[in-house]
Image (cartoon, rainbow, N blue to C red):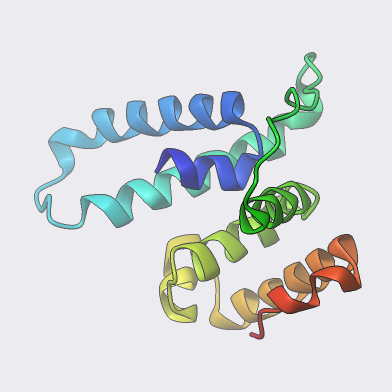
Length: 150
């Protein structure tokens, strides 16, 4: 879940804050949870909603986030590609980013993503399309080999 929060936030520190808030919400909801078998999807839903709620409040914050210090050079090209894609993902609007992470990182179906975000399947499809278009524009033609089709 921490990595999911990182994919959504694009920043480890903010991801840890989202996770801390999500775990607090899960703890407070604990006595109400009768069936603990679906805890992971429930926590994922809390993480995504917490992230989206924080994004709505971002204009009221006084702190300004800056880029993380540069990572060390990696000898593996695939790792470099992942870092570039993750960085480009931070430029995608929050709602589209949430859809992309749930659909393509967690490999959820359109219906499961719609249920997690409490929206229609059409919204998931349109947000996926718009998010992938934004990623493609951000990454440029040199990343055509990573193309994902909706």
